[in-house]
Every structure is written in structure tokens, then in C-alpha cells.
Image (cartoon, rainbow, N blue to C red; front, side, top):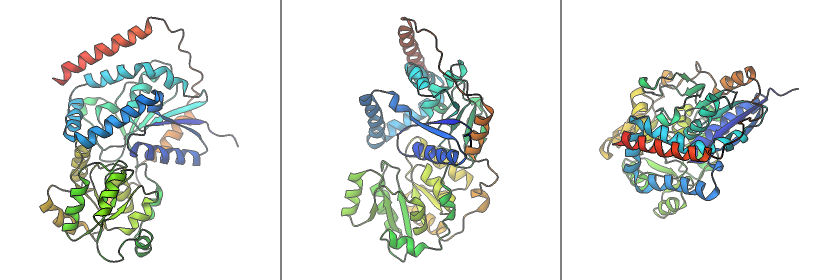
Length: 389
């Protein structure tokens, strides 16, 4: 049987949420018969620079969270910083285009910087296949938006400034369908598997794959409410060691989150990202507490307004909020995604209707083009400086 074609999925190893959404999309497309290639956008950079960018972002979240929040707000207010970003990434466009095989029929992104590479390629005619993006946050930050992107897919309740001038397509979240089977019927077995207490209220404290935020304080304050905290530290070994020494129920990276969701009564999170979507899909109540600056606070506000989660704003509020949500059945209308399109189906339809990308034909590159790239970067940075003041 002839396969329907190839789809390229572009993500980034910044945290885990972008890659996990890409993993789920790739799996759904393979079930539909597509060949799927994966590209990490940061692998276009030299190895040392790739690591430097990733560690700089991690360091900003760990050591200067309010600085990250300021940067998030400033880049939300003016298009100039996004133009600067697009110009800075311009020298990588050729490398990105070379990574797209000739038989590709669609390209999908789950990371915003990838749009700043692929949108211009699509708009300029060097990429002839649809470019579709799946936005992993509830707030559609301007860094996601790039001329040339064909479709922006968002989860329900995602918010985009009206002045952005783009349309979004609501889709079901890219969450494994295994979470939908979490009905609590085998809670005792799940608790035994993870070495957790058989009785009592268990609150799952999550902080992403990097274990960022005020996790230690959150754990202590959850415990003070009478709930038993279960902490997922991701790949943050120092955090895991510190909390383990304090006698907490602490886990590192968890491969089977659906099983862990079956074991707990509530999820306490700080970013409103993929784990939050997984908990909602599993029917586990979610409380946002001490949200991360930037995208975490923006996501928390949207989730609370939509009634999907509860936001505890202080230690005094945490106990009453946990007591209010534990044991209460989730609101079906808020969590029901049956009326929404499967993003993999949307991508599949677009790919089947598209002609193959074909080889890249950029023409001869003038010796002056690198100079033009540099001038463009400097001009964009000057524009960004005016927009940030």
C-alpha cells in the first residue's frame, strides 16, 4: 500500500512540552500512514551555541525569573523584537530548507522560533508546502506569529490579541489518549506501583522537565494544608536530592504519567503547560500555584478565567482551594474536546492536498548576501531597541 507522503515536524529541546507535543503528533500521523521526520530547530546551530542558548534560557528561569517576565511582556508589546528575532535567524534559513526532503507534503511546528524560519521560506516561495503550527501555550505570544504560516492551531480558550491579524483554528490538545482512560478505578494499584500511601489526599506537584520555580516552598505549603505532596522533579537532580532528604515522596523523570495521574487526587502546577493539559484530559482537578513569570502567569490567568483550573494566590488560599476541588467531578463542558478537530487529521488533510516540496532551488548566493544578512540583523536590533524603550 502506497504511503500518503512525508510530514516534517519541527520542535526544540527547550523544556519538554514542545517535544512531547511533537511526539504525539508524529505518532498520530504515523498511524495514518505518513512518513514523519523530526527536526530540532536548535540542531541547526553549532553544538556549543545550541547548548549555550538552552542553558541561558534555563538560567534565566532559575536565577532571574522576573527578568524573564519583563522580557516576555516587552516582546508582547511591539512587533519590533519579533522582527529582530526573524532577522537574527535569517542565516539559518538555508540550513532549514536543506533539511526538508523533496517528498515532504507538509511541515508542522511546535516551537515558535521555527515559525520565524519557515514562514519566510513559505512566503518567499522556497517552500511550496503548507506550514502549520501547533501552539503549545494558551497565550499566543507574538513570537509564534510569522508571515507565511498557513494555519495556527490552538487549544480551546487560547487567547490572541485581536490586533495580531491572524486566524486560529481550535483543536483538541496533543495529549496522549492514554490520559482519557484515567477513571480512578485502579487508584490503589497505581499508588502501590509508585510507592505512595494507599490512603489520604495526594497532590501531584509538577514543575516541568527542568524543575523550575518555587518548588520547595510549594511542597512545604501543600503539606501544611494536610495533603501529601508527590513531587515530579523532571531532570532536575539537585531538586530531587534536596526534597528526598526532606522525606518527601519525590520522583524524577516519569515515563508513564497516565498511571501517575491515576494515583493522585489533584495536580498543583506552575506553568499551565502540557502536564496541565494532560491532567485536564485525565479528569484530575488542577490548581495553579506560584506560577512561573511570563508564559506561566499568562497561562494561569487564561485557565482561571475559563474555569478549567483554580488559581491559589497565596498560602492562605491554597488550603481552601485544594479542599474545594478534591473529590469534585470535573466540569464536562469545560473539559470536553469531542467537538474539536484532531490536529493530526488537519495536517493529514493538508498534506494529502499538497504537491511535494521538491528540491530547494535558491539560486546562486551572492558574496554580498552575508553582508546583507548582517545589515538586516543590525537594523532589526535598532528597531527593537526603539520598541523596547
